Structures are given as C-alpha cells and as structure tokens.
Image (cartoon, rainbow, N blue to C red):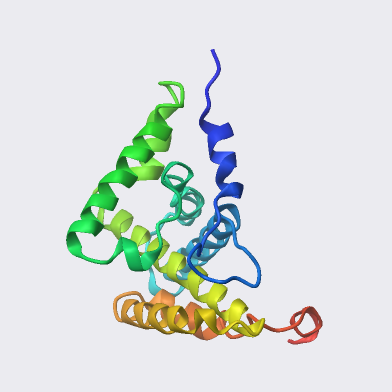
Length: 200
C-alpha cells in the first residue's frame, strides 16, 4: 500500500503567499515554512540558553515546517480576510483543522501519532510556550518578506510591515526571545551578499 502524505506536502512549493499584493518576487509556502522553521528553532535556542527555558528546539523547527501545511488544501487565506471578525476567524480555524486531519489521514496508522503530535501538540506549559514562539517566527518571517519588498522599491507592503511590526512588538512583552532576535538578527536583512559575508 502507498501513502500520499509526503507527495501532498511537497506541493507547498505551488502555494503562493500574499496573493492580494503586488509582489516584486513571489514567495511560496515552502520558502516561508523553511524560514519559520529556522527562526522558531533559534527562538527556542535563545530561550534555553539565555532564559533557562526547557524548550524542544528541534520540535519547534518541525512545527514551523508543517505550520501552514493545511494551505495545500485551503490555499493561503489573506490576513485581512482571515481576521476580519471573530466568527470568520473561528470558522477558518475549523477549516484549517479539517484540512490538517485530512492530511494526517494520508499516513499509515503506525506513523500518524508522531505527526499528530507535531500538528496538534499537547497541553504542557513548555509546549504552549514553544508554539507561541513558532507563531512569533511566522510573524518575523512575514516582516522579513515586507522588508524585502520595500528594499526592492515596492511600497505595496508598507502597511503590512507596519501592522506586522506592531504584532511582533506586542509579543516581545511576553517573549523576550523575540526581542533578542529582532534586535540582533533582523537588522542585517536587506544587506548585500558582500556586506553579509565581509561584515563582522
């Protein structure tokens, strides 16, 4: 018997993000998910090293890789639509959950519990905190996309950048890891390759 899970997941490369916006360069879901995975991992590492947390950074990276997998089925719902009001937000969350369960049905029964844990997690405090960091990584990735577009001379993303930055700043009150990442790692985005390689 064969299973469609990974062949389906591989289609993230065909899902374009920011569909309502004029993009100087289209970003697909695979690219975004890789960014979120790396940033989420680093936020957990910062939490463990600097703030004496006990977070599973490797699991955070996996959650980041799969965090938008439902969009293979649903497509990328634009943020202004998704969060238009509370009813729509709840309805879309239900649609996402149905899509995620549908994806998990494409796994063999013995592997499914491992991936359910990645998709849905548990109720532990460390787990909840880690998932908040993954959400923060998602926002940071969106901010970096906005910065890239602005650096390319595209002002279409200026409002999105402003609102995303506000969301991230609100998160820093509870998540000091996010503040550290924003101060230490975000400023170099937009530098040329020569600057990135040759700067200390």
